[in-house]
Length: 115
Image (cartoon, rainbow, N blue to C red; front, top):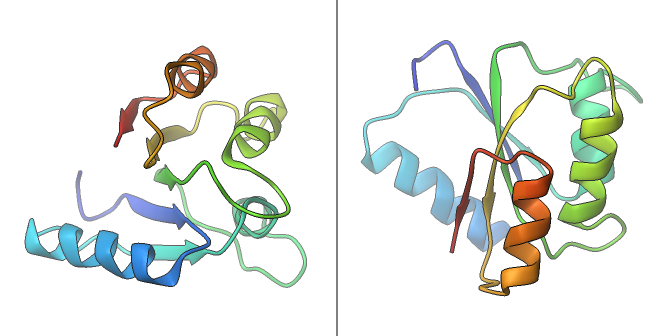
């Protein structure tokens, strides 16, 4: 991932967000990381809505599935239905090893599923 690719980290758990950011830094990645606590906030950030400036393209999304208000599955559905965001690169980072979760995510064209 080049330095010019922004990362949107979508996870309701602050400790998990911190861990992912630490892992990225440990790998020498210095990409700008934006954080969203849940799917609705992430969509607002991507769309530049409700006071959010908007995340510059190109970007990659690191997505948790189990979140309040809007789950990762609901976020993916909304993202793929949006004509300006449908082609976003998404990697799911989840503790779920449920094959139905994985299948659903890959049907929504995620680039990867990491447990």
